[in-house]
Every structure is written in C-alpha cells, then in structure tokens.
Length: 237
Image 1 (cartoon, helix red, strand yellow):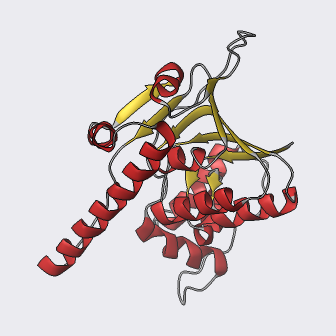
Image 2: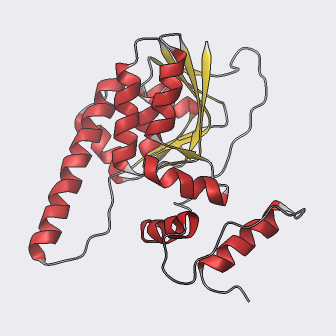
Image 3: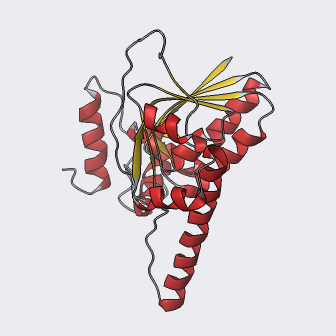
C-alpha cells in the first residue's frame, strides 16, 4: 500500500513553485501523476485534507486517479471541499475521519468583458454544475435534482451524514474509537493575478527591481514569510 498525501489547495502544476516558495501545501496534477507513476500499480491510499481549488487541476487529478490501474482508497482526514470532494470520489472506496467534513457547492468564477463574455461564462458554469451533478449522483445513487439542491445550498456533511447520503463508504476508527484531528476551511491563499508577479520574483525575469531569493537565516519561518511578502508588495525598506 502506497500512501499519497493530498494536503492544501488544488492548484495548476505551474503554480506549484510559487506555493512551495511561500511555504503553502498544495495538490497539483504533476505531483499526483508522479506519485501514481512511482506506485506502479500498487494499491494507493490518499490522505486528503483540502479546501478545494481550481476546477481544471481537480479534473486532471480526478482523471489520473480513475485511470490508475491499482486500487485507490481515499481517507479524508480533515476536509474534502469543492474540487477535493470529487477528487476523493475518484477512489474505489472513500473513508472519513469521525471529525472530518465534506462540502459540495456550485461552480463559481470571476468574469469581465461584454455581454457575450458574461454569457459564455454563465454557460461554462452551468456545464460544470451539470458535470458535478452527474458525478455526485453516480457515486451516491441520489436523484440528480436532490444533488443539485445540495449543491445550491453549499452543503457541509460530517462523516455520518456523508455515509448516509452515499458520498462516503465508511467512517474511520468506527470500531477502535481512536481520536482524529481536522484542519479548518480556508480560501485560496494566492490569487491568480499574483502568480506571474511572484514567478518573476522567483526566476529573476523582471527588468527592474529584481529581487533575488533571500539567503538562509536563523530566523523563525514566520519572519521569513513576512519578509518575502514585504518584498512582493514593495514594502521592503
């Protein structure tokens, strides 16, 4: 059995260097595909604690898991929200910690432009919602209208509720009564419009005000992170 840690936000692979630089855990398609390749058909256990993230990245990970030749077991140790919920459902079996949470909701986006642009974005969201409804309905056996209602209400489920509704197959530690810990929900730590700016900082691509990575110092991690962010937002003295 090979264990794959899936902690943090679901992000595109080319965002991973930025997240790593700032010390944020992340789940990206490239890392998951590499882990599956190294597992080489052995049974895989996913340990999931994620608030979700980007739809395209989540879809790529879901597909890779469904195509994997070995058996996949998902263990939700903290939370599996939004995109992370359907990543979990790619597994052959889904287990949840007694104190874990799963959350499902409708797709969302930010759109600008003319009426045609906004109409296109609306159609894309409707299409995504239908895909999620189909996926959740297939896993749970629930009527599609019921699934859509749950999504519209941004439904949070504890382990017992998730099992009762068919989103999970079992509750971890149900027999042994062992304690488990959870993490809190959160929003995306790095907004998309900041990714390129940080990439320029990392790879020294800016033509002016180029800042090299900080030297290692015997400071607490919090101090290092604060200095990096100060450089990024131009507040460094």
